[in-house]
Length: 225
Length: 308
Image 1 (tube, each protein chain N blue to C red):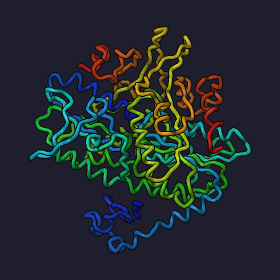
Image 2 (cartoon, rainbow over the protein chains, first blue to last red):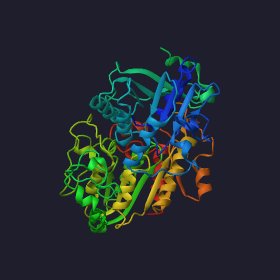
Image 3 (cartoon, helix red, strand yellow):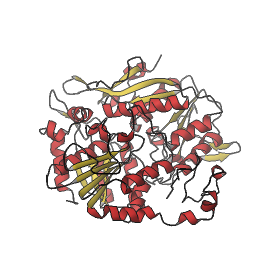
Image 4 (cartoon, rainbow over the protein chains, first blue to last red):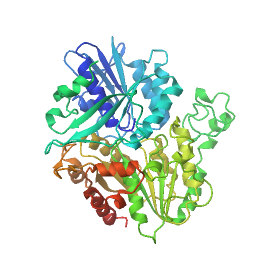
């Protein structure tokens, strides 16, 4: 997965459809670039301790969506987390072990791009629990797909099942002339059997999928089985 | 600096880390006694070696971003192309994105086997040399599943053991973030010196939020910021030629951020689908679509760069 922007967005759209019925948690392990707090409108919140560990931040009044991110631990959102691998690994271990998630139906783990410390740390710490699988997010460009192929290898090598691939930013509808421009698919495109969903970007803010509360019903329908 | 010797176990914390010789992973490692005694914490001799190697490199520029997917590698590659279009200049492009090396593909060099230790690393033009871990992988599916210390070792090799020769410019492309790769690049080049960093962003606040962290990183390690480039500023419809904003700059985009922080906005590059296509084909869009407003924006940025 090349683009962290689309990871976060995907996690949030998923939440929109799932949380009506389910108890969901999002664990943001992008320690250098934590975007989940801002995208869910809770960037000013802090994490507190309780007897059973760290209390996650809830994104909604009904407390159906629990979040943990290093973003909540920083005093200043501009503060840089300039850590090497071992320190990142240690914090991710704490996020998995010490957060009082409570009863969850689904825990989504949002990762930064790559196949390194964060990804290995998550898998190692979740080893004793069941990892259902991974969703890989890409855009149609060959450079993005090039990285997804490496992520596929990572999943195979670490025994993580690939649930599917989401191709984001498949096309763009020009609001002026309404012509839909599809990004030309390259010969590198993953096999169609893995390409389950496609999401088109709309520029009209009511259809902008990065605005959480205005998700277009068209886009929502892509994600309902 | 965290460095892992070749005979170290899997979770080696690095010879210069505080945990050196003391972590549970160190049990049984042949270097454990040396590490625990602190002898390995002396300044890495590689810094001096790299300083000597880099004496023939006039300008070194790091290309950074907070977020992934903002067009950093695209910018690095095309900055290299633009600088190399002057035949009298020698340009090097070093890709230190170890897990996600995009430079070979963007430069149309995928599948090339480059030499690490001798001669010119090669490349398309006589005066443009390229190095990336991508050239060392057998297949495009190969994943580099390495922790920090091992990535650091590779970066040291790229800087110390590649025969870069005499260069006017060395452009260093990085992965997104503020972690091992960035610290290693800065630390290994601390003897040689880096001119500065160019930071790439897109207009959204989500992207800018991470750029501000990147800027703090530069301040922390005393790396001058040459300026900021805002990519994907506007979308020009190939059909009707109207401009729309795919990524609305709800907090003023890179322009306002630069004003607030006293940084130079080097330029705003519009989103032209033809750029993506050129990159996919490994061609320079400066040559392929010179009429594109994006190509024009790039040329302006390269010509106006304070380093030139």
